[in-house]
Image (cartoon, rainbow, N blue to C red; front, side, top):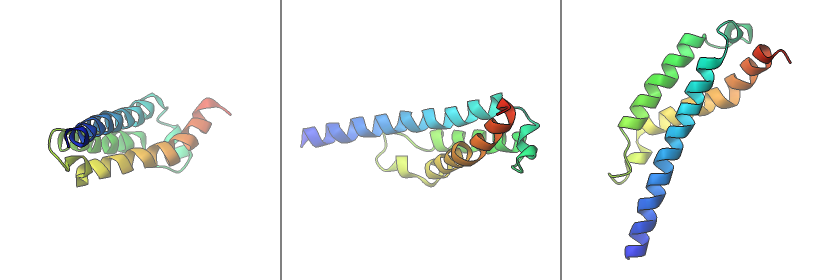
Length: 102
């Protein structure tokens, strides 16, 4: 039984820090993109995306913890991962295409 508990412990920790890395990647990428590129591709403005990613990332990080069982799947954690995934899958490619000049 101790092996199963250790597996849960390490899985929770790896998942917790991987989700933090995902949120930070989305926020950092948003910060380095040009503000003019966002409206040019018909997306929300850069300050709006920064606010969404920052607030959801903070709530998702601080309301989830690998030390309390089940908290990694909190509403805030899921919402922050969804916000980061939407930015990375939809907004980032469009803004990147405009700002890189391709």
